[in-house]
Length: 129
Image 1: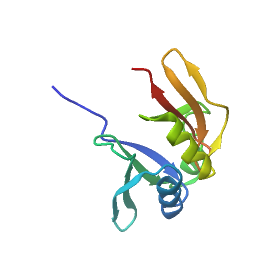
Image 2: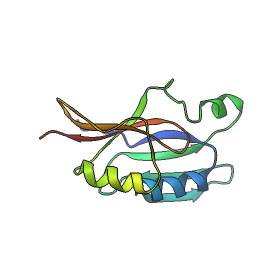
Image 3: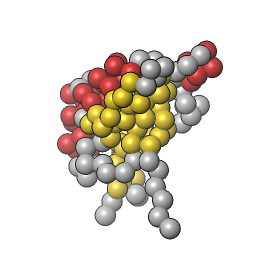
């Protein structure tokens, strides 16, 4: 048996705003953007990623809107792995990404917490070999 996570849904306020931020600030690729009438099917992926996608889901109603930017109660939501921490950290800084801390070296690798455009916490992480 082989399984993998195909996509993780991320609540957003606006599709176009989110597409612009993730492609500019994080360098994600727009994989699919299909209008389905009442909603859009928008998939993004980090450069070089072949399996897991980020599904942008525009918040529908007050309850979902209240979760935009805080889908996990303030905890780190997603971990963005990289093969070159310094390169990606520098590029993200140049794009105005907000970092909650300075990079730190842990037993498992180099990591820093950053926020997406809505305030969700992410890790940028380069694992030790």
